[in-house]
Image (cartoon, rainbow, N blue to C red):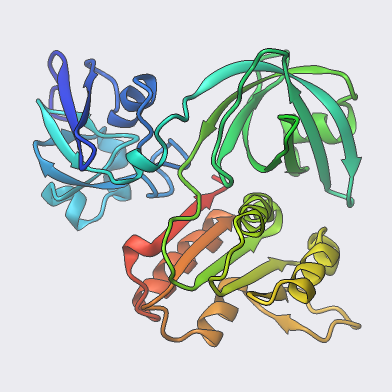
Length: 335
């Protein structure tokens, strides 16, 4: 990595906002610290969601990140802001900053108000922020949840209600220290620490038809987004694709069926990768069902959440095979 010396200034267009970056900080880290939310998801250089157009200036990366960079990153036209270190002053194009104005990251205690086991590996938590905490977020964002021993994981929010409570859908991962504890041992009334909101997985304004694609508990932020659309009186066509191995993995299948029956603008397509004897619906990979149904996505917006392989495959095929504008692909990969 090229040597990064001293502090740099980053100007964000079109908002005109600016912030300083200390030596060793990434652009994203410095922006979040200054209360300016740039496009991001995993914050670890894995998902590519933070890729942003560089108007002027140069950035550097750690050598081990080279295989995560695409040609435009290497040529200096774009950058992975969660890993990029400025080599002097920088100007970037980040229109999402204006939309997220007023939302700031904070760390606060939360109490477990309820814990509901939905299946053999999915639990729903409802968390109440401590009194006096004003937690603002966009539907689709996520928080970091920290246990008393310091172990921390990121979970997308399935809802925040009028009381301020936060709903999380958590899958118990094989050998997962945090998810195993939450599923098997965490008790109601326990106190945890939350930090957020993070991520820029939220519905953009406009009138383009919307494709929502989820795998497993990637449904959580999709649920928050659909509920926002309902509250806002949405009229845009929305196609919701939800994939799992078995029907039990679609743990809110009935809710989605009810949405499809009640909302004239929403169509629900469940997809199973392991066909069951009584299943008469779609099978295979969930993103492939979208490709089969929409060979031309040039006029659509796509929102994809779930396992990295699902998000990566959807990004590639929606753009390369279905002509989706890359700027209209938004994702949250559970890295």
